[in-house]
Amino acid sequence: MKRVKLGGSDVEVSEICLGTMTYGNQTDQADAHAQMDRALETGITFMDCAEMYPVNPVTAESAGRSEEFIGSWLARTGHRDRVELATKITGPGQVLRDGKPFDGKAVTQAIEDSLRRLCTDRIDLYQMHWPVRGTYAFRRNWDYDPSGQDRQQTLDHMADVLGALEAARKAGKIRAVGLSNDTAWGLTRWIDVAERMGAPRMAAIQNEYSLVHRLYDTDLAEAAVNEDVTLLSYSPLAAGMLTGKYSGGAMPEGSRAAVDVAHGGQGNLGGRKTPRGIEAVEAYIDLAREHGWDIVHLAIGWQLTRPFKVVPIIGATSLQQLEHLIAGLGRVPDDALCEAIGQMHRQYALPY
Image 1 (cartoon, helix red, strand yellow):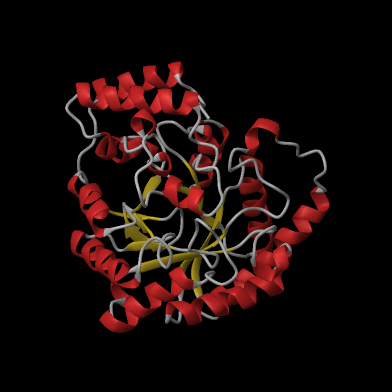
Image 2: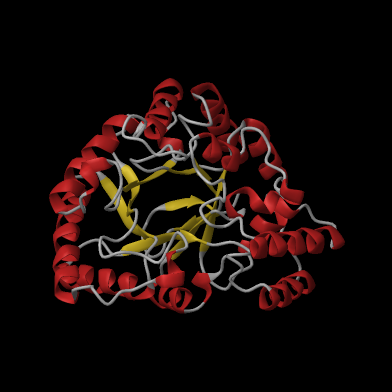
């Protein structure tokens, strides 16, 4: 598998990343270990996690379990030097740290906690899961209001956190840093403050990106290209919608939507499963079929044609699902199909 550098850092990873957010909830330890074994066999060496995982639902009791599954796999196999690990500190409003915003002190402690759970002495990419000032991710773009933000307070927060990250880098505990669910303004300000301080420069930004969710394509893409930052695209299959398994109103047992309903949720896949979203997904499934593609493989392969650095994160709740994803790796759509996708995007821009 092709190897790529994360932004301007010296961290080299596989061009596809294995997501682990279901480990410890929908995915048990045996299956999680089997997935990591299989990914490594395929050349996928890059694995992404977070201190709050597993998700669906996120609970104080389960937080950290996904990292522990990775740690137990590393302890069993001794493969630490063969893989690159990414993890994240949780943003405000969640179950950790009583929902309080993180600061430099919290970052220092969170790194130590993640290192312990991961059974390692270093994290290759350490990320901020979402900004403390707020975010338009997770369908909040429809009524996003940044008017209450305090610019100087934000810049002071960035300096505080970057100081902790630089100390961790000097100690050899992290190699590179990144953002998640952030904006073009946020990305450039983090970089400005880091350069002024001589602290780690953002190498990656992990935001949602798929055939049916392309908020990244304009301002963020421009900022990332000019600042040499790699997109780690999460939900490239639109939380499973771009598999076709929810077609016709289906709700497969054990699926993300079904699990959400079982825990009292709406089963709308974080606001993605709307009438317009379903219509757009069906159109892309038809387009893939017309061109002789499996929609799952097209959704991943198309990302590697984009005019900016991108590493898709593929996640599976089972080894069987991972095998299906792996079967399509290495194939990318031709110019004609990419043009057809572009036309489809004009018809179904921002469908949820």
